[in-house]
Image 1 (tube, rainbow, N blue to C red):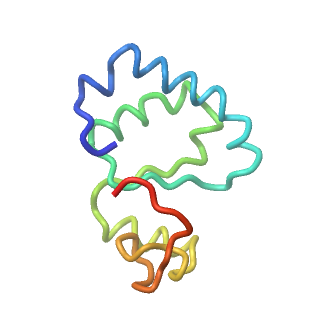
Image 2: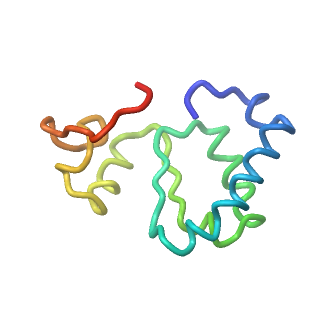
Length: 104
């Protein structure tokens, strides 16, 4: 969500897209995924996600939202993932090699 500004995040087309995506994927997420970690979330995005939590119900129960404080979210990630399976910027190993990289 880096680079999003408030007006983009709350625009009607964006909200419709998020809702449609959540509704489509929620059965899959609920059945097959234990926890989703979202890190480096801006305050505005975190507030918006927490605002819709009661509406979207069970799917958002599995989502952990973490802000930009690495000291808080890195230990949490390392509780769930072995160090060698994470990139260094997420608290993992310098020797980490992804199968495929997208974005930055």
